[in-house]
Length: 189
Image (cartoon, rainbow, N blue to C red; front, side):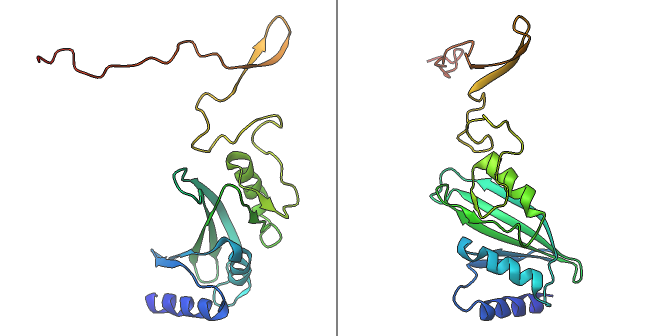
């Protein structure tokens, strides 16, 4: 299996002679490849159509937020080959100001997954057929799964009995910020 893995990597690098895989690993019948986001669509098309791989199924697209990095988001594409019984995990890194090319024309299951990542993290997908919010309201501000999103949110949603409708108001916290002195009061100086 390891020999085949290195053969596959050599074959991929030969096929994509202009770009190379940044890093690769093998973990329990799963290939983990770190690639540049500009070549993502080419790699996915290659893994789907090539007879050595035949990854006909996109299982999931996962976004991970690393706010301390310059390229903040890591996007993982999980592919499955039914024929050869192995998985491929393509990892790419993208900045919050840039976006990725949509792969919903290659894998139909990517349509929902890309909309979810756009709604929760704010990673934009170019050429997506229907990129709109899917899990939050249309008037929702911000992206709730980003690490810099406040835990309380920006608005409070509640049902108002007098008006007989749902109301939105800015959040008022019940207590101000307090300074805690973490020194032990029982410690003898």
